[in-house]
Length: 237
Length: 237
Image (tube, rainbow over all chains, first blue to last red):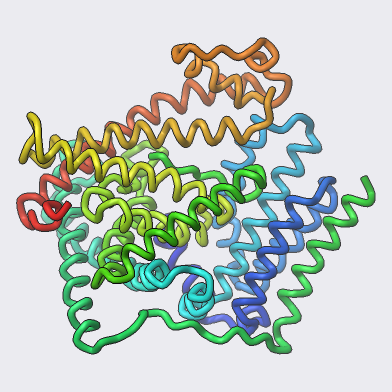
């Protein structure tokens, strides 16, 4: 599955789901992700680490309703990570620890991304990213789908004229399509910038208040479960 | 090209913390410089959305992609390109194209590439033999920037691996010509898979060289196209 399809699948799952993870606040899910990363790094034995990975993958598949698409989402990081781990792991146990660690964190990222709509996440990132960076993040997330649609239109037009994209001969055409997209994106940016200037708007993405609710018990409990599994691994060593 | 596809859980914690600290400091500096620049987030988003699209499209049959960081440096200048690189990496990390804990290191690598391309393009296209010839100037600037970023990426990967692993043996052919010799304990890996390391070395080097050539050509073609249809976009720096 190409990354474009990943974007669409993640966005659809995040916007249309109604699981407890969808309703929990982005702050609690970010806390869960942080605890998952810390637990993955502090785990010393592979068995608790494998348990963490399985727990997260099952939760991600259930909450995000991604089903089999989750496997497509995880195959890329797990394959590359396993290749790297095979080069640096001294023992089989260490190799298993590496792979389960990366599977746990990757599943947790999938869980957070596929249950949090982008606009809710951007309200949270405004607290810790500088304004220019957060505004760029928001504007990019809007622009990328517009650009994707334009790219599809231009490629369809090119195919109808008989061009075979993918050959070296068409590299010049591909570059002109990319250049054309770049110019049109900058034109849009100029127009939007003038409109914002006239209206005297402030930052594009406003901070949203961080308020925990009763629904946040689910991500926070999962985060604590990671830490407990990591501690069990440490004590059992 | 100079972009680590490694997922979370494989880089050591010291490298993750150090890279995020450096990246955070640079982004804070970029924010201070850009906060008064009108429309900066929108211009960054225009470039960034093109980067996100290009990073998700493999180049022909090669398992690599153009990341357009050098193009971002040429079009936006170093500071805006740094923000664009960070945002592109963050968005891609949420669809598991590179880990979320690797965003800091990836931003530093691609930020170096963008800054270098920006400086080189400005100086080469204003003076010397390539004065006013945008496409060849972009090709020269991109090639040097890509080479530096690729070396940076390789060094980061080797430095983050345990000493004595097969990853150190993988670096031996590159360190030798530079006059650096590893002692026997390091050149003969104590752990990891040396045969896998040898196979990877034979596969990775040609792919990297082909990727460098293709990204250089694409960047030069795009800059040539933009110079014809909207020269103001690249003449500002």
